[in-house]
Amino acid sequence: MKFQATDIATLLLKKISGQLTAAEAAALEEWKNASAANRREYEALLQLTVVKDELKRYRDAQAAGKRLTIPTEEVASITIPEDTQDTTSPPTRTPFLRRYWAAASILLLLGLGAYLFYRDSSRPQALTSDNKHLPKDILPGRDGAILTLADGRQVVLDSLGNGLIAMQSGSQVTLQDGQLAYDPTGSVSGEAAYNTMSTPKGRQFILQLPDGTRVWLNAASSIRYPTAFVGSERKVEILGEAYFEVAKNANMPFRVNVNNRVEVEVLGTSFNVNAYENEANISATLLEGSVKVAAFQGMPSDRPVTLKPGQQAQIMQVGQKARSGIKVINDADIDKVMAWKNGAFNFTDVSLKDVMKQLERWYDIEVIYESAAPNVELTGKMTRDVTLNELLKNLGDLGVHCKLEGRTVVVLP
Image (cartoon, rainbow, N blue to C red; front, side, top):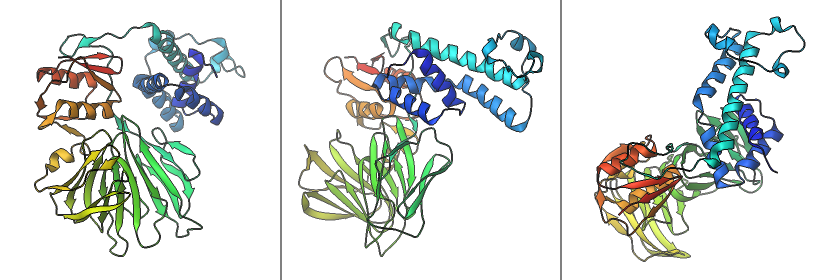
């Protein structure tokens, strides 16, 4: 289906104001998923917080039965087309809130429509990170995920409100304050049903499993898990990076299958697993309790190691297999390992290439090198809520110069 700019503006307006029908939501999803560019524009347009705040003022005031107070000259400057007037009443009796809503709607439509129409004619600037004038900024990642239910249906959790999301075998799935939880119903029928939560680049999310275990999922990661734990073990599968706080149950061990290459077994503990495909190692870092780590290639291989708090197990990745042997780091840098969960970057003794991998995942960007990557190691910490331009400025101060072209960061020699 081909959409005009004004069509998208109208749908986004209705989404922001909570008036989107199921058919319109499907149409908007179709447009958003048609290309990566559309997805980026969708996210950018939803960041028009000024108008969103005004619409929220309108809805809150309407719900409370109050009148909005805005300057008289502002009202006088707004012209409302005839088709937005209340045709069932004389114009002089049109409620003020209705007129304000119409005006806000028109302003938002004009803003969104113009943005969508002219965006392709605007060529992005390519400026170095230490220039005074930077191109359009890129916002940091935020909470959000995609939930794939057992029947294949997908639920985008980014913009949903609190409440019941679905009923799955043995659990009801609820969203509360940006966290997804599975509350056992006590009845499990048939085979176990599995859900998958995945975070795209630029997203992170918190999940509570049916046994009470809490999982923090970093960007570009996923976890597959049953909607109810039955039998003699609790088993989940992850890709990417996740931090676990496992609920204690000595009679039902908790096992994490990591990329089909490593298994982490626990009874009740807190640990972090980093298993991104483009990283050199799979690592499991223990904060509390005790875990057993085993590497396998189709079948278990190598002798498992049992970690103590503060230790880290590393398994080198080679292609699609784990190289023989598990290396144990006795004094792991817990602060650096847990920085992502605590809302920070920790670049202490991190190579530039590894820094850029983190930025690619968190800002949903691509990093390329104009020539060979500078052989430098960085140091320092920074919160993850800074915009990309702010971060590039800081890298420039450290001697790493980049230019931003759209959503591509070019690292200069």
